[in-house]
Length: 161
Image 1 (cartoon, rainbow, N blue to C red):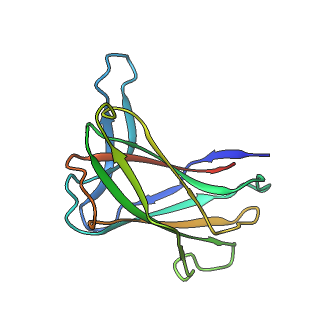
Image 2: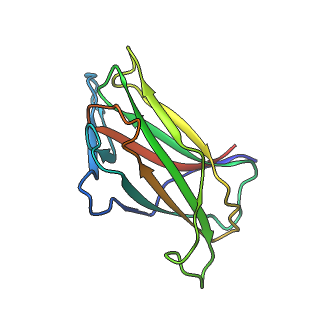
């Protein structure tokens, strides 16, 4: 049985100043045009790492564990590059001492007509958490190949599919 979404219980943007809590203001005119997420500086000038913690439910859903990323930007061109690293950590173990496994680099690309639209990426994760574990995740935003010239807002969740 597929499951999720599970949203992070802890979000630490790090000291760089390139990552920050953000509200994306959509260009539509409805009464609910804002999304809350992690802001990433325009024209990212320094690799920056976001730290996330996800509580795993007592019964783990079946399927492939993925980090789902929804990205919003008022952009008609540009690319955001990021690498996700992860590890499940049981109670009684150190989350800061866990060795994280890096996944394949992910690119989120905006093109004409994509401004103010959810851009989606799903990153399959190596970790196989047990019930009641914490999933420790680092998302490294990378300047090499980064061409998004406006602030991006990203929303993270875990899904199984």
